[in-house]
Length: 191
Length: 232
Image 1 (spheres, rainbow over the protein chains, first blue to last red):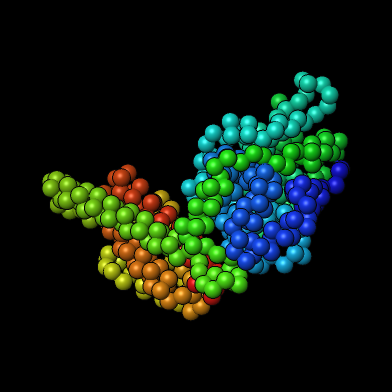
Image 2 (image 1 turned 45 degrees about the vertical axis):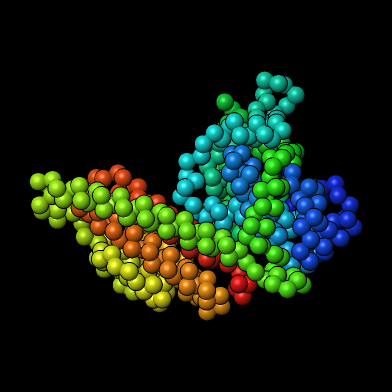
């Protein structure tokens, strides 16, 4: 089984770290132009996680905006102990989890598969085109809890305990949701 | 947990998951929307060096309050119309005959679902009451599905109210006052809709209004729970 990627494993952006640090310091002093540069450097990654977690474009746009507004508000709490992109990523995940928690308005997801066209298609399978499926669509079709567990653990590399702490659920529940997600995705491959 | 999953297929799945693209293009107008929100709400990085930088989105709270009032006005007006309409029909002479099962009193959390009259102050009482015990309110065996559904809203709201009570001393008094006013009015609207629903259990419009009112309450409480301490 391949190891899960850590949240830090993939560079959050191509921005120069020194430039990012400088922009962060300026933004912490209230410089909105500096914050815009941070946005430009990191919006793609934040959008991807929001889109993958929510499964729908409009919702993802809302979440991404919320995440950046929240990041602006909380910018002073960023101490540079992790990469800014990692911190921002976690802010976005938290925004999603808080929004989803108890949010009965989102029980019915609409237009799911079409919205996932926004993401570059990643194929699952061998070189045989007949075996390929759109993994993004399969993930989007998962039940919400299973999708969240799979995306955060198997795509983004968070640990069970981290997901449990952020989601406010038991680690065993995260494991169960992850197992369910994997089983459902593998079943989808058989179709 | 993964014992019953084929290791080879699982490996392929995880490999594919690890190779998923990590970037998606946001709406080109997204930054402007973010900027507008930051500027309109006068949001500043908390504890930044600029004077007045601790200002939180007070305007957001006022907008939430305004939205709540609009909703309440519409809800109350429609409910009143429905009740008036119903009062003119012969079958309404004994409305209590069609009431769903009574919901017992709520104990420490006296709220609209406890079957109390829709009077101002209910929300304030509930907000200031000691932290309610989750699930403390029991439904009778004959409680209607509607009662069960709204009891869940009530429990969720009670949790958030408990959080607010624990934090209120450390929040800005002005904001707390706005919250209390909004909650009081939303609770009054809930009580009124609840009363209307008891008189006409099958009325989908009133049921929807009640649902919307509860969502409004939860939304407001969630916003309140999200307020950083001492930042207002």
